[in-house]
Image 1 (cartoon, one colour):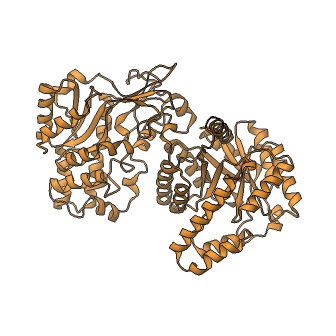
Image 2: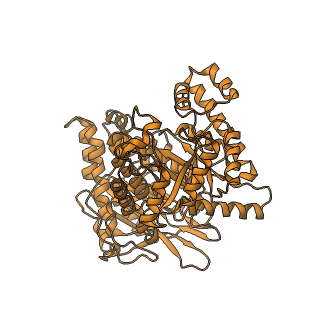
Image 3: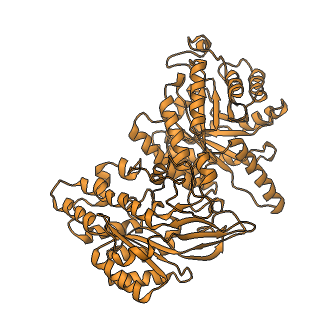
Amino acid sequence: MTRIIDKILSRRQEKLKSSNESIGETTCPYFSLEFFPPKTEAGLDNLLLRIDRMSHKIDPIFIDVTWGAGGSTSARSLSLACDSQRYLGIDVLLHLTCTNMKRSQIKNVLNQAKTNGIQNIFVLRGDPPMGGRWKDIEELPNQELKRAIDLVKLIRELHGDYFCIGVAGHPEGHPLSKSEDEELFHLKQKIDVGADFIITQFFYDANIFIDYVRKCRKVGISCPIIPGIMPIQSYSTFTRMTDFCDIQVPQHVLDLLLPVKDDDEAVKEIGCEIAKNICDQILNTMDLDVDGVHFYTLNLERSVLSITAAMGSSTETNRRQLPWKPSAIQKRSTQEEVRPINWANRPKSYVMRTDDWDEFPNGRWGDSTSPAFGELSSLSHFYSNDNIRSEDDRRSYLGENPTSYQDVYDVFSKFIEGTIPFLPWCETQLQPESFTIQKQLAKLNKNGFLTINSQPSVNGCKSDHAIFGWGGSDGYIYQKAYIECFVHPEKVQSLINLINSKYPTMNVYAVNNAGEEFQETSEALKDSVTALTWGVFPNREIIQPTIFDPSTFLIWAEEAFSLWGSVWSNLYDYDSDSFDLIQNIQETFYLVAIVDNDFMHEENLFRVMAEAGGVQ
């Protein structure tokens, strides 16, 4: 959880430092994204997945969540904001309007936001209620705060500097402003009483924004001003939005759109090009000191990702604080530096199951049975691909009518190869580091080692490495090779025999759905917590953010086995061959985890598995 103004100013310092050290080298702009709360729970879960995907692509500095007039979406807005911070690790700017809201309602919202760790508020007067007129907005019955400046004052009065406050700017004028001078006067008032930065209404003429920023600077508004960009999704939406908001449309924009106005795909493509050109013109106007862009997404992702990709953006892995994405909730972000590897592909489930912990492992991994760390909460699947995809979608990915082990093996292999986007144990598609071992993983899956988690070994790569890097620069990263997979009992026995006889650097753990462990591994290794990822940095202790804990593995196994039934077998008719097949795998296969402590020789892990499974 971070104040957005601090992040913006930090990025500005990075840009200045970069420009001083590397003449001619440019720094990628930052991006922020706006979303509105859907009307249904399923829609909310789908949007969270979309936000998660987009955040992995462009690493937004924050997202903002809109607020319906009079608080009409308050519960859904708060839910979306809180879940985005807690489970996705993204800082949120929560909209708050004063239109048709009483002071007591606003106080309650601010208290809820603070309780849930939200520290950034976007203050707006708000639109008139449906069918209302702007000129009547101040006469609404619950209108105890007349203007946005009153809401800024109230927030500072009640909460001091806890909240970072953003306010709206209108390059083409607000409907209630009588003149440009009046508009700038009211904007400066909002900054003077405590607002920290400005996001503007959208526009389609970059020169209007450029002139607006220069006029703001002349009247003494020195805070960051972020341009609001709305990609054109369809011609009808474009005309409706520009008419409603009284936005000027340059003739050259109309000339591009009119010939293809009935072709939505062509309109989107041209819209992306228009938006990119606007962004480039603004960001290359040096006297503006504008370093980022805010996108009004309309809850859509393709256009925004296309625009940012064309601008040369990508998630910068060397910005990663840790190899997993921390929660943006302050309690976790300041304490939590260690996680078990088992939930690497289902991090939201792990965050939810540890949400009530009052303390988190920090620094060296301590005793996992310590009451300070608490217990993992009861089994819950939270929102995830497995819960919100339709049955038809899941069946198309997992198989219409699987009747053999090989049918299931092929599904896992297709996921590794990237031809299907979903497995119940993986909230996202394959991570970049897994591409380095993709061929080996695909071969193992085709031969019955159903992998749900893995990492390659790393022996001292730089901490700003494009794939494996985390923790900043000037450090070195190490990893032990690790694989976690479902395996038929016969292959488990073969694996254990091989490892015990030929591979003393490896540890193997195996448990079935009944909680039965292989006796050969349970006693000697049950208390050995192993660091799987660690980093060495100047003037710091060694950081070990990813570990394997046998006791935690057994808890994870309960969740892992349950997904066979809750997500896969229930796609088929009870007592059908397909139902019986998946149930058989759930009841008879073992979940196996293998750690190779020799991080200098990754090939040994794949060699032993291939030998145990007869893989050619």
